[in-house]
Image (cartoon, rainbow, N blue to C red):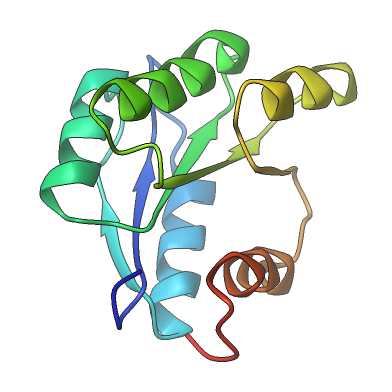
Length: 134
């Protein structure tokens, strides 16, 4: 991992609701992480290209449209295909309980649902980096 932890926050698919993603991006930036926010309506391919180009450690995906079972695993698979499978993918948004196990099985390492405190996201990042600080 880099000295400074770098994170892409992305909105895959046609979901145009970005308040949560912007909140997470700002909160992680305020916690000391380097954050790249890609904006809305990104393709999995563009998200992966950005993640590789920006040499990030994490990709955080936010989705409210219901296409998470298709789009989140697609990002994970594209990262592996591009030999960037060491980039950790996590997700958030309106994800039904019954989809959580499927997403984890497909390589999404954590899901943060509505109401999850930012401290949970930061704890997850720290647990994956072995870091005690941002």
